[in-house]
Image 1 (spheres, rainbow, N blue to C red):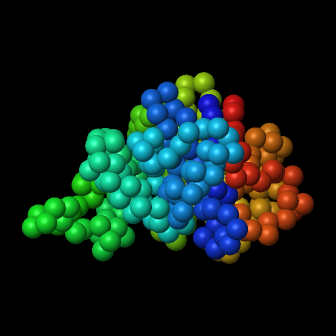
Image 2: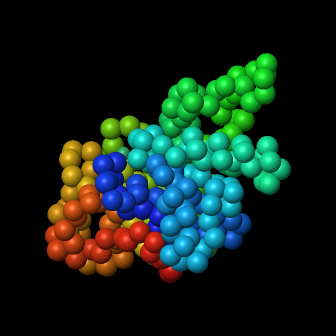
Length: 248
Ligand SMILES: [Zn+2]
């Protein structure tokens, strides 16, 4: 499995990009979260790695929750694909996968910018004009881009999921935003690689708590969603880097 890291920052990053990644699946690319500057993040990661990625090449987006640093890019992603369809460059409707609580409200975020009629005199637009909506439910594995995706709700101020993404040989564990929760770590611990958030404040996981995990878990863990001035000496868990490709 190959995973391209687009960003490792948090909501307040001044120098980087919000935390997101692209997983290369047997049937296409899966974008995990869609933060601000998504076009630039894809472009810069493509340039540094040789992957050829832009919004036209990604048909599956998975949103962990509706905090802006995880979903603010949806508006421009949706508009970019609308332009592609209007210009007949790419007729496909991208799929937007998320859990029931986020699916119920994502249009509340997007509608003020996106509900204008697509044609003069037409009906107001809806989410279905931009994305094919797909709901993933904890306990029910879904197939996305040829990958098996399972989700679990985390502990965070708004409904948020962590992910286990498998190609049948390897599995990526993705914590999503969460406070430290041993049951969530246990759920992720079967993964080949665990990408866990680490940040400050009551809604997140303090890295010191990850430092206390057993060696076998820590050794396959990488941290993301970190502050710009994250001190790598605060842990022996390696922070992810922008433009890094995980292969496992
Ligand atoms: Zn969050």
